Image (cartoon, rainbow, N blue to C red):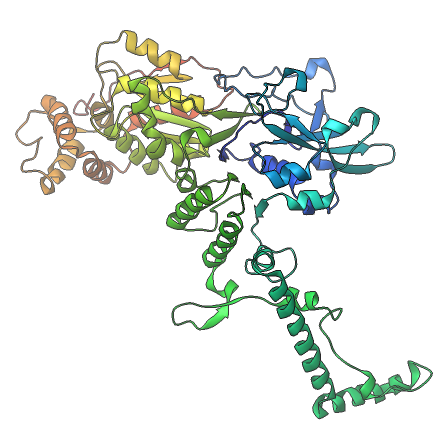
Length: 611
């Protein structure tokens, strides 16, 4: 539970399994992991907090200048949606922030560690009063973090405590000892350098856990040998001679002390002389391929990131280990990002990671996905419900192929099938550099199916799946068939529906506005892929129908579009107009109608153009 911490005014997130945090930028993925770290990791509270760690509330200068809160277009997510924020006169930080974490399924050693602070757990895994607990209830422990801001003294104070024995309102805290927090099997996978020997590093933790006595002996041997080598270096004639010259220069050796100092009184050592100081300077080298033993950083970011994950996997073997990882996979290639995410999930008791990579999310179950969004300035989190109908199961198949690549996009536009996706996607790219693509408006094009499972009737099911994940959803459909209940289903599942002109399929839309000569020339280019030119021998009035039928039957949309663009030098105007309408509808503050019916293009001046 988070209250008034960074960008979260309030959030409750419950999970007794793995959690992968995804979503749009600035939606709070890193803030959730930072909140967990403040409670569970002692090193996270060694540094001083900053005022930006507190929720910044915003006050309006006058009531007349207020802009109304945008109407939410999202379905209920089962989590806590936050109110949209109004424009600022000046931000004011909250006086305190609270974070509370409940740990359940504790092993016997941890239960003993928290003796006196254990509470019975309810059916939802949260603590309940003893008089309300089931007879066989398991135990849990609550740990909390409070950050307090004293505006008068201009100070920030932080404390980690047991809520069961504390009263924050009067400043009474039963603090959690740092040693207790260190005993928790929590590992933070950071973007720092892997394979470090310094104290507190993951590799050092592994060394100490495997054989503490042998590790201590090895590091003491290093200290002794380095100290001896440094003393030998100091006494070497070449070094001593140079030191003597330096001491004699300007009479420094005689002026520093009551008794003049000589070369034997000057020595060298690593930093403060401790083994830890030396270990902090040592960096790993790796021999890969024929490159020789190069420093790990010289092998590139992917190799370093892979070693970092390997350390976390090793530490994740501790019973009930919790892994925290922010922006996981950013420096890994796609294959290793998916592979290492799956390894972490299989090794750890519980994984909490955030990612921008669909390959990482693919390693988790759909119900482990938590998507964070920002619509109208408000943060919210969303989770998928398990499908119960056959059509919902079919739609769930689109999660990995269509929705996961769109996780960081605020809006998805769903078309009927792969042909539509190819046409709209190709023409969207053709608009550059003179027009902005849909991605500039935060829109990702997806299809309701990848083959025979597509069609306008599938869009509502995919749209419902997308809205469960907090996407703004636009349906983009033909109008070549009779309407009825289908359009009603679309309107109830999508935020906005954009429809082509009456009796117009995607093939007719891409031909609209093109001259007959251009269509014939592009059609002739299809001879590379088919045995006959569909426009050959056809009268002008029948060319469009013949070409459209062949495109649909033979799935030749891509080469035809390339040839047509080469002939005209401009993308099809009707589809460009459709894409402009989609971009306009992508904003959560879109003021237009929920169903946008595209009208036919004006009649062309050239009578030989395709109407």
